Length: 440
Image (tube, rainbow, N blue to C red; front, top):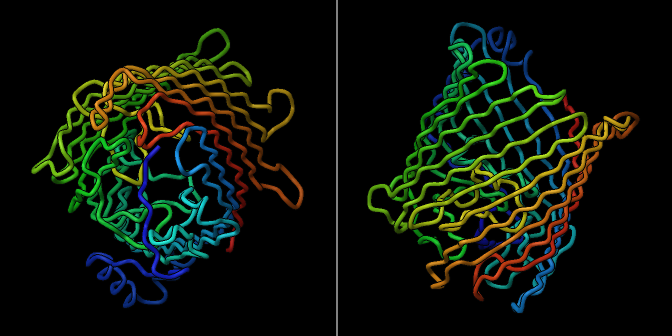
């Protein structure tokens, strides 16, 4: 998982409207002069709004000899999404607005830093609350949609992190097209990131846990192009190219295949990332080839997966700080398993209790082990790490609490890294309660 720096907080709370680029301003002005009848026909009639409540408790108990023994916080999040429809005509315009609010329920200077809340660098105190309002203009032609302003990206090279209280987003312009049957094309230009425990946009940097790269080096923008192709019902392909200016370039290829077998389904999930320096290489040397495969068999309520990920080259696998990389280690809890030379094995067992008459209840056991790790900044080689995860989730199926989702996650993580490394021995516990209700 990404290693995020904390942010200075001038006051206990902050509210901001992020900087809006020129395309967003022009789109908003265009909407303001459209006839009321044209707006009502699609813009208003097809609009909808939701409010998501997220109650999050995170507890990290460190088991090494470091000075900080725990990070433990509890917070409440409010996520309001208001999405318009599109105006009528061949070229439709729309506007989305996202409102975010995070409220501290429990924290202290000696146990802050879970990334649920912004933290002041001067006294380690978490903000009492933090919030922002983020608009997004959108345009649709046939099956192509352009969005400009506050955007979310869920692509292999930059997967907006969902693992804390509030969502992580970007500032930029994206285009997604489904005009060709079976093919989804995506391209975009991103110049800022709003991290999951922040209230403002900032320049993007390269993630640098264990001092892999120059963590202070920034990029002016990231541009990407690629797509997903559904060959048939059982086979899909993916290819993307991303350039993070003056930091690195990355090519991504993936294949997903389902094979009916013995009354169940065998799924093959193959992924690869090829990374190299870009421009002035302000982040330092980037030379990495990350190749992985996960093979899973689903039968009834059971699903068992075995995976392997191999990192080769002179550097770790790069990604944007604040995001997650969709390799084989996304959604880990204590480490990202993306160190230089690392070879990672993992086993995953999922069970859906609908098979025994309990719909909405799911469980997971996951074990990852990485070895052959090289930590150049610490002059350390052939190091190891391992993480064991347990997860139980339930979505209420009926009654007044219908659709309330409860998740409990536990991780036990150990390594033999040198003192000062970003990832530490820890036992981690998370409890999350989520409820989304329609506003209109």
